[in-house]
Length: 473
Image (cartoon, rainbow, N blue to C red; front, side, top):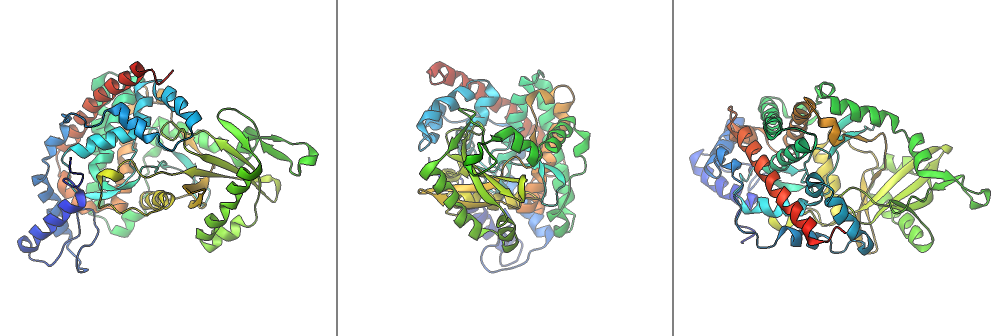
């Protein structure tokens, strides 16, 4: 397969050339809102027409199709390829976690879906993708001003790409999570339709708003969804003091610090000696890339201890370090997470995306594009030839559980997912172009939901193949 055959940016450039004569202006933004050629402002009407024209590329009802060509590489081989460079001792753990359920497999198999999506025609309407949009990659956390917010909170796979790829992954996750929570397929499909309809309605609203208002838009319907309320309640309890008591323990007086990380093998293991020194040294380049006011704040804290932490499902096997720092005494704890970041799973299929060379920086930029409020300690660094994201660990963080999606909660939560994705895409893409493509009917939402159900079935088959392979023993 020619990786560039359906490249969104290339398609957008071709459309740009077509529109030069059709709409009688010198240049248009590419379908994701990035200028091409000479800097030239285009009207909202022209941008909406650009989105409508993309229906020639992919008709909206065609998104329901999940008939893929025979995979050149099997799903299992794609997962195996994604394991390269990981900590060898943790690879078996990742397979075991993925084998627990079809949804757990889906969480760990983003590279598989990236390859599958790349086989399908796409709109070429580009925005910043979350890349791993699923129901458990949204959560509550503390904003810089201390308020609790709920938003997309995992950007390991973020990259610029076709907007519908995030929606298709979210729809498939609603199908799988719905089944796991005891829903019939019809209810799960209705939740996926509600998710995309909410996305579409919000994008149409954004297309009529001042762009500055889109950029700072706050979602006010969060309290209507019980899973969000539960996550916010968890986050309220996850104070730095709670994290201190949960992750650390008192140390002997001769240790030079009042507390250190607990040993909770294999999930949390203290790191000492030269490796701990290297982790602390990596905070130097990290500090230099922070804004001056963040550097000043970080300067009040001294690192006391380091641990290796096993995280997530997709990230198991990546090098992930926690640093315990202390400011004004033992009660002033700061925990930083230094998480290894490889290239996005979507990178091989988006050759013109041109993400930053540093994958920690790629994640930071994607997160800042899509979130209204971001972690004030968000940054990146490097150590031993590997690239890392740095962020706060457990600062008032709370996530949903699959059992939280029982009953009417699935549909309500699906609507929240749709609105938050719309906000992220509206901030990083062009709402006029996206709204122009989607239109006013429900056909697009129904097609994406149908795809989600079909892809959920495909995921179940891939999961069963993993279990038969014996790798999860």
